[in-house]
Length: 111
Image (tube, rainbow, N blue to C red):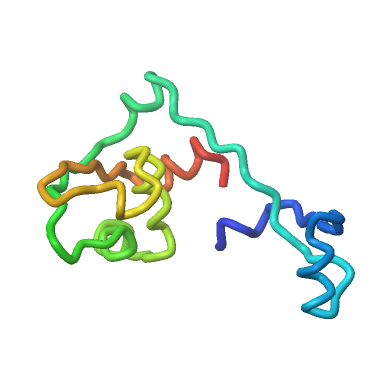
């Protein structure tokens, strides 16, 4: 299951992109709608377990997702939960948290 499975597909034909469309030989592009992701409520957070992890040189969200979820495509859950959208927002020695179990966090997110 991809996080894009239930996302609305939009047609972008805004005139601001006219030059880009012309260069690509198209009149519009299809884009996925940006999802609205809410952070879990306090009660929902209490239902989760979290594993603290100290960030090391060479760490990547997708590697941690593979280790903890057996699915590297779930890297975005770790980034979202820690409110650090990319690895550039994490410094060596920072503690990040891995929310568990995966099925419960996905239900909270409704993805």
